[in-house]
Image 1: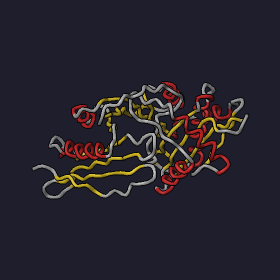
Image 2: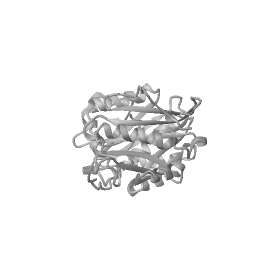
Image 3: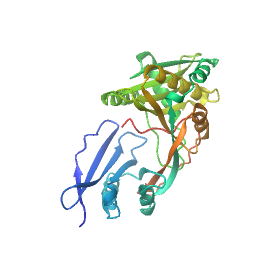
Image 4: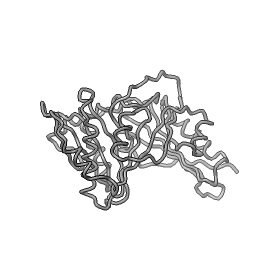
Length: 314
């Protein structure tokens, strides 16, 4: 029998985005799948819709995924979106499903993990203690300190030329309210947001940043959110310097933390080399897929010194 698709009320709505949700159930009313559609609300990404779709393994190949996808595509089109993006692990059922449904593969991502017990503290100390003339490191937990707030907001443009292949990702427009909203979202989950920045001594401005989110209990694996260096400050090794400092601080503050996770676009060789040098080991590959809801030319964004941008702030 065909599955029943029920639209749900999702509480995940904020200034940056709203979410739509659907539940697929069988004839007995048992849930067999779900779909979530994130609709960014701010300028720069208000053309985009982001999809998460899950079907119970026993219910695959029964058009459950197709029914959920149809609901999400219809809603995205009705909302005036031009591009629908989603992600699937390479070789997974979702990978094959998306290709069969007309999605175009636009980006490959390599996921890596650093085992903290195996990290070399002496090597990390050597990297962080090495002078970088004209720059100094600073760090904080939670939201940015008031005295650095304005320059931290300006530093977010380091992500504007992020290497996204041919993904129609747009541009994330940051202001102080959004920065504070993002930090508050992490804190509301009970997690710890740690930020390390490189500061240009000439004028006290932030030249680059790296962010790490640690689970509430300080165990398991922490997640890197983003690493970016402003174009005018690239070529000085700041990304490696900041990331090494973040690893060193995580080891000291959270002795029970097992590892650090990150994902990097395959067309970002600079950050991939940094992660390799710091001891991150590949765990799996995922593909970013895009479905054009209406034809619009997509710009080809260049490669920069930053990690694959995260959309985890919500």
